[in-house]
Amino acid sequence: MTLDKFNADTMAAPKVPLSHGVVAGGWLHVSGMVARAPGGEIVDGDIVAATRQCLENMEAVLATREVDRTSVVKLNVYLTDFGDYAGMNQAFEEFFDSPYPARTTIQAGALGIGQVELDAVAYLGE
Image (cartoon, rainbow, N blue to C red; front, side, top):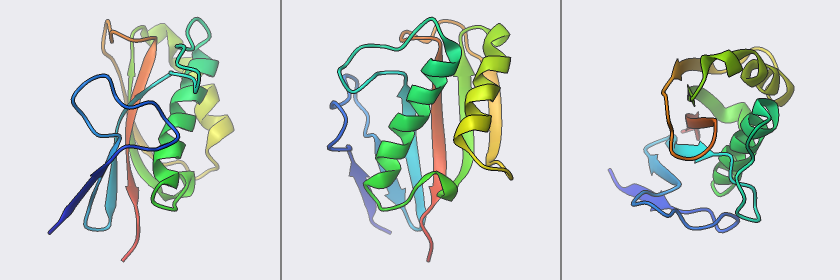
């Protein structure tokens, strides 16, 4: 099997050693997305807006392989403060239609960048 490792042209190149996404078989694995806006600034302080930015960044990676949020099968969400859980859920309800993708959410302590980070797996098809 050939792995397709890539960065999204619409996003800044990662500042750490990773690829935005990796395609393996019919699956697209999206690296941890933080709430970095297109201008480079971190969206912070409003968990709904920060989560929304992470989800939009994830969708930018999906778009490189011509799929969208409806292809997302599983997400992992990392919060610096579990008190932000309700706001993170609000952003998910606004972003995804029901039935929602599978998801795990954990409090991760200091993430290094912002309040929230998420990674995802999407199905590309046969």
